[in-house]
Amino acid sequence: MKLIRHISALRSLLNTHREAGRQIALVPTMGNLHAGHVRLVEEAHCHGDVVVCTIFVNPMQFGKNEDLDAYPRTLDADMQKLEEAGCTVLFAPSVTEIYPGGLEQQTVVAVPKLSECHCGASRHGHFDGVATVVSKLFNMVQPQTALFGLKDYQQFMVISKMVTDLCFPISIVGVETQREASGLALSSRNGYLTNDEKSRATTLYQTLQDSRDRLQAGTPIDAVESQARAQLEAAGFRPDYFSVCHALTLEPAQHGDDYLVILAAAWMGKTRLIDNLRLQLT
Image 1 (cartoon, one colour):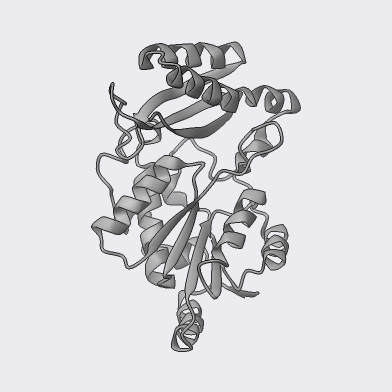
Image 2 (image 1 turned 90 degrees about the horizontal axis):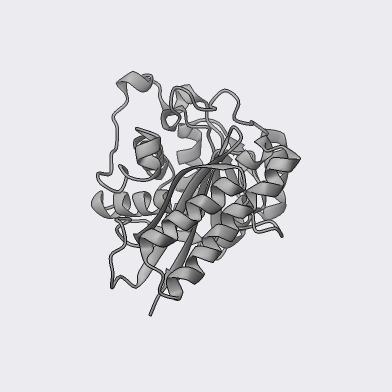
């Protein structure tokens, strides 16, 4: 695996691969890699001859009171995981390499509507930061395929719409959420949880499963959502949102919708966790 820090070197190397007819698959990350990220790299081998992973803690997608400075940077351990997973190229640029003119002067990519609800409502500007940095990485790497975990389903939908709207010639592949044996979705932020909080956090996925079962049994959507919030609060969560949505629009589900996604975000102590579950009613 080759570690590259600068855009010019990245483009030069990848041009060589392109000239040789090799397909490029991209896995963008913010580092502090876990088994979920490794699964993305493994899946990328099914879509490309050259697997490029990026590690960049993107300041543009963090709010003023969020954990940018505290976000774990574990490059050495990440490199070992990527080597073992067969990553071809690791692009780990500095903030000034990505934003040479500073964030205040950066052109912003915004995906309307999909970016404004759920996490977008709670984290104003977050998805503008995501869309902007991902579009920049797409232009730098120019992959045929890019892979994203479905744990952040809203992010996956935002990026998919951006690719369609901006005519990127890139196939976006979603990879299923990787979980601990308890059902807790793997996340870099799980490391912030105490042992007790981590034990109680498993209620998030259980609540999603219970809500799926209630929907399939015909329970009204508003009752499902209120029951879920109460279930989370009883486990010590502070719910941000728990919403049953149309899986393609992320708008509130209506009677008769059959392709749904249940989106959830909740605070356990000082840690904000997200998860989701998709279901087909008919």
